[in-house]
Image (tube, rainbow, N blue to C red; front, top):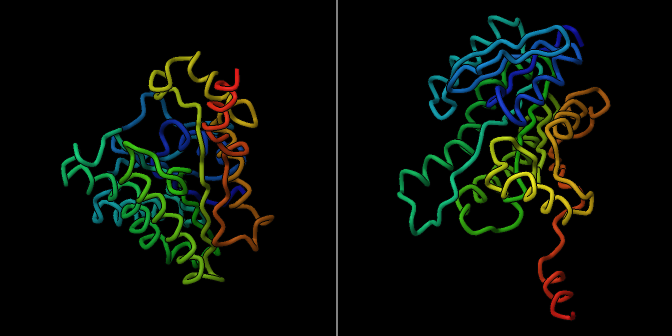
Length: 251
């Protein structure tokens, strides 16, 4: 795989960085993009990722990103649409501009990136992996626009797999709760992370390397017939809260 090339949006931190490090270790050439350069270069396995500063919500910047990545690396075998996120905010308290930005980052940007990369991916017989979220499968207050965008991304994954097969495979990874250094305080610190993890069937949240391993498999020849899939990576799912409430009520 020494000649294979991957482009990862949001690839300088968190899950995106873990994916980049796994692919670098596996011998891929990797290009990563984000709005700001990382404090430390993304590197692993004696290799360093190419960093390309980009706001993926800007269609012209996306076109330039893909063109530069192909020019610098020579080809493109894998696009990982990882950039995403949202602030917690009720719709009634959100401006129209905020709602548009959340949808642009989590749905429109992946579509534009995939469109820009299609020709190179077709020529290489490559694939797209969209990083989706469990929020796209079940509702949650405070992240309505984000959940709607991720639901759209799962649908877009299936639609693109139909449009682009057999030349380009398109899959999604639907991620549940993830240990993330940037969100430790959001979960109530290390103790909160442990408490939440204990409620899951696997007794822990997902970690970056779990997602990275799934990406590596989807991009490998072993997954040559996998397209249009939405793989749920959530450790068995979230146990319904009413069960715990019923048990507590029962003394």
